[in-house]
Image 1 (tube, rainbow, N blue to C red):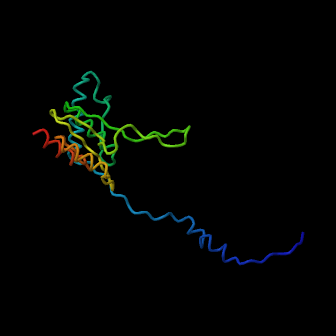
Image 2: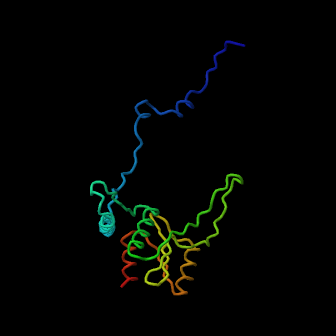
Length: 177
C-alpha cells in the first residue's frame, strides 16, 4: 500500500451537488391547485338524501345522525354519486367492474370476464336500459367503449359519457321527462 494522494477532477463531484445548502433546503415550486367546488346539483341531492335519511330514522337525534356527502372530483366519487342518485329515485343501478385481478402466484394480471368497453354504471330508468361511462379529468373514450356505445344505441338503449354530476343530471332529466 502506498500513501500516495490521488488528485482528481473535483468539478465532476461539485456538479452532482447543489450549489449551496440553502438551495438544497429550498422547497420545490409547484403550481397551485384550484379549489374543488361542488356543483349546485350535487349540493341539492345531498340535502334531499340526508333529509330522507333523517325521516327514515326519526328516533336518532339530529346531532347523532351520519351526514352523507358526495363528490364528483374523481371518477370513483362521481360513480358513487350517480348510483346513489339513481337508487334514491327508485331506479335500478349497478356498478360494472371490468378491471382484471392480479394473480400473485402467476405474477400477472388475469383479465375479467366482462366485455371490454362496458360502461361503469348500468341502470334501468323507466324501463329503459341506460349505460353511463364515467370520464373524469383528461380521461377519453377508448375505441372499445365507442364500439359498445354504437351497439347499445343500435339496440335501442342509451349509452352516455358523463364528465360531471351536472352533466349526469341533465341526461337524467331528459330520460325521466
